[in-house]
Length: 195
Length: 111
Image (cartoon, rainbow over all chains, first blue to last red; front, side):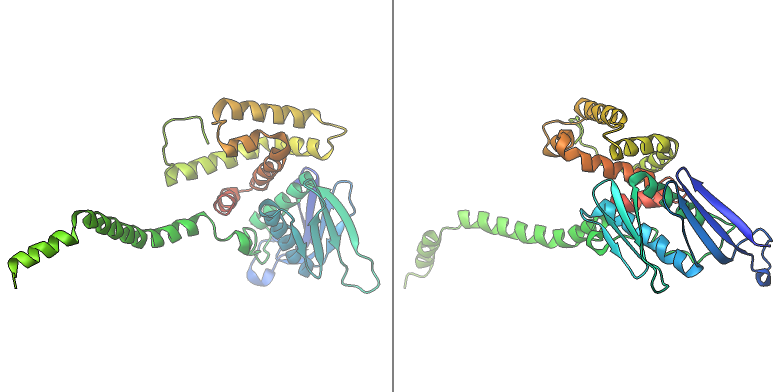
């Protein structure tokens, strides 16, 4: 008998079907061996697949959501799934089948469905009853945006002291030049050494 | 950006506390955030919620922010503020999980 767990968020439902790993002394209601998963977005075709597809699809959504916030033209492309924004409100998802002669599935979702789907994935990641290889990109930051606030602060801390030192030397030197008169200095020298 | 003559730098623990409050608020307000986003998606059929939100947003900005600042002027310009508002609402809607605090912090640090 397989276990079935559902994660709901308004317009999206994620179902995980699988078995516990008894060799690891797990509870009977745990899921560690996922046999099937289904993602239902209200009004859209059902998305389902094997366990090896779940990770890449979750990663795709997380990466895309980060790109969406940081870039003006967010596009995510992979062998399995492409996601790109038609505009600020519509996102075009293309799911490519691994089987030959199967046409890709095109789905258009809005911002609300996108956030519901991501919240379903968050629930799955946080669930203690499902053990999956944790996705490493849930807080993915694109390389372009990595030079952020903390790095800027570190960079400024590194570069500011030498700059301040150089500027203070220049300022001190320039004020001394005002007081130093080379003609007067020559006269003084001739008075000391009359020859 | 705020309408204030006192410039106070926010402390790290205050910044963390503000993030925690924002995440908790967005959990409660998630249905409303979604309604606003949905109204913008179906603007021709249901423009009321988006228009009300945008109107109140501009009122609050005018009331509390320094309207002489160029960045604030950008927020008040209806042609330019749409993207900022939608992205802000999306960030809030992505951060309602238990990991929301860390997610929002990352978004803000790398924005």
